[in-house]
Image (cartoon, rainbow, N blue to C red; front, side, top):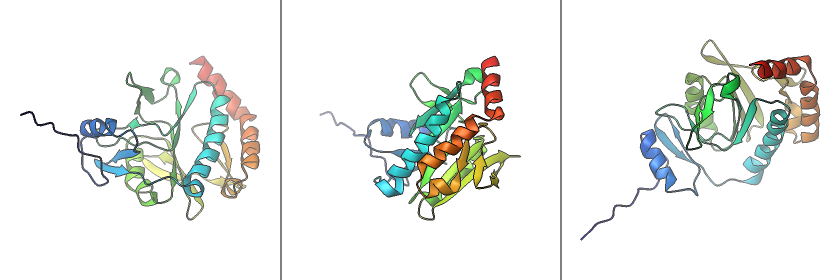
Length: 222
């Protein structure tokens, strides 16, 4: 008699190697699961006001920037192989293509490997993970900027990697400006209020800045 051994399901709190995590995840495509510091986290159901809408607003902002910046790639809910203990699936990310100096690449099996330059997370029930274990994993692996939108508090925190530590980017007249992606400007109050038209208007100002044009020219020359 042949006994078939089924693949155990992924459950939050499991401690797995990245290889075993990927094996089990491949059998559960209906889940969103992440491996953070060797521990599995399975996402809760996604609600509109707590996740879906803010996620869409941030993707509109990031997508507009990527469309205007050749050499910059955008991804939504894509698995990132950071190291042997960390395989997150961030809500959004921007990455510079490796051909023009970026720190990550797309593998033959269609995963991102290495550290994207900017990672974005929508944090509702996941806030404790996003601002602790996940933050440390991103920091340690060299993700240069990390943006977290804490939905319950309606607080947006944007960190920049400086001397191996995350420090908050400064707010200038209500606007935060990326140091890694020149021209990526965010008017915080408008995003918090859901006024995406104002957010995009400020972004267009950033895209029209000399810094953004210099960045585009620099990427083209590499």
